[in-house]
Amino acid sequence: MFQALRGVSLSIATGEFVAIMGASGSGKSTFMNLLGCLDRPTRGSYHLDGMDVSRMSSDQLAALRNREIGFVFQGFNLLPKLTSLDNVALPLMYAGMGRQARRQQAQAVLERVGLGERSHHTPLQLSGGQQQRVAIARAMATRPRIIFADEPTGNLDSETSHQVMGLFSQLNRDEGITLVLVTHEADIAAYARRRIRFQDGRVVEDVPQKAVTA
Image 1 (cartoon, rainbow, N blue to C red):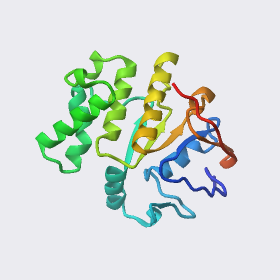
Image 2: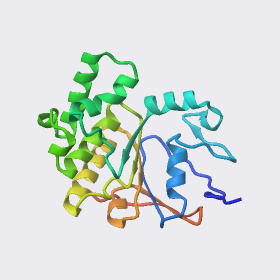
Image 3: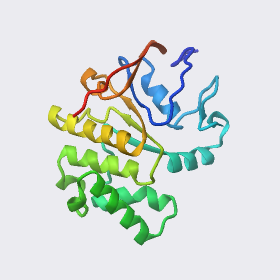
């Protein structure tokens, strides 16, 4: 039986900014999916805020994700016919928030990422960097304690990538959001204060580092 992860034992503290690195097939994306409660471990356990999430039902996991976790992906995953405001407000609708309240909160988060004046633009009216900022705002909308970012700069040019990473650093520093970043790019991983490297499903490096600033 193929094992994507082997003998992994790690703790990530509240407020950390961690970069997870490794070649394709190293296990880093599987690890991210487990941390983000998108998959369950077939062996072992995973505790989030003291809760053994490996024993939770699918409904419990969905509620936990919506309450505690934000996701940012390489492909933005914005709905093309919705405005920035409506894309950001979507998880708030799933959380049961009323229309006026969720629109106000979505607008506030868009302003936080510097896109307050673009709230009525659709994704096609935005640059790649702006679309990723909308995706970050959507991840922040429910005020999660943790954001998981999977190759968030993969579709961006170098300058825009560093602007986005500067925003992540600011959110981690100013709001205490725990950030877990998957990347294969060393200059992007350098924004984190801890670097974990996977190889063949195992952790081969776990070191603190001095984070660069944008």
